[in-house]
Image (cartoon, rainbow, N blue to C red; front, side):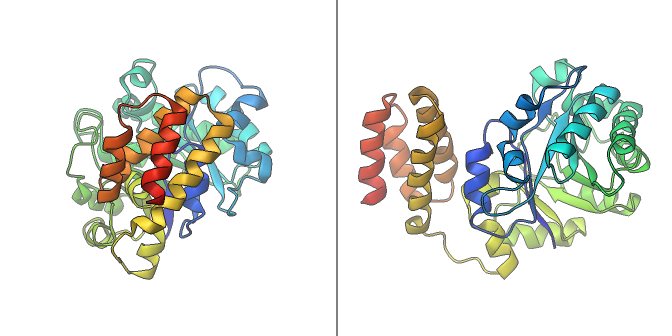
Length: 313
């Protein structure tokens, strides 16, 4: 069993990565993607996206970070992969799964699932550029509009030299609409020889066991489930699912609020805490009460008092 914290653009930033991995249970975390166009970025770009590189490539709790790159230019992807590894990244992950229309219009993310040859070229260039002992992995979806190229895409990634493949069990067209199609992961697992990591709709210990039974792999990547339940990885490892206690989550929320106040503008800080509370309310009734109290508030000072009053009781 290996459990990975997923990259989630605009959600799992360095602050939430730090908080969630501190709860334990994760083997590594993948960064939000660094979008590569056609050149090698200066170090400051990688360090801004992945501040963990300045502390040995690990979160504060010691969880290794794997930098994720997104792009279609093989040479530029390879050059940035080399630099990320030199800066301390524990491997390179390549994003072929982002469903964003903006990203796809620029020929990045899931749109490349229409082009198995491009997947091969990008992965091969990165694999040949970084040292042999450095893991090169990729993340994809079941397809763009449908699953017709699913197995061909997985084979292209494997034959290009990737050592691991994570698959979000939906097409780009399906977005994040339930359900995740774990049965398709079983088909991919039978088709490739490298480890398969399952992703999509794993939001509880029960979900984990159902996914394993259907997909046939014990390795999973947790995304939104980890945001809703910061202790989910630890619960999966313990095979225990006690009722989520708001008393355990509330201090994390307070800590997060204080931490982002140091690096974000008041406006961004307000938006960021609302984003997380919106996810928490799906698992905690107390978060629903908090959401009602803060969802229309734009002033950081007023929100601070409301947050303190409700969280502290």
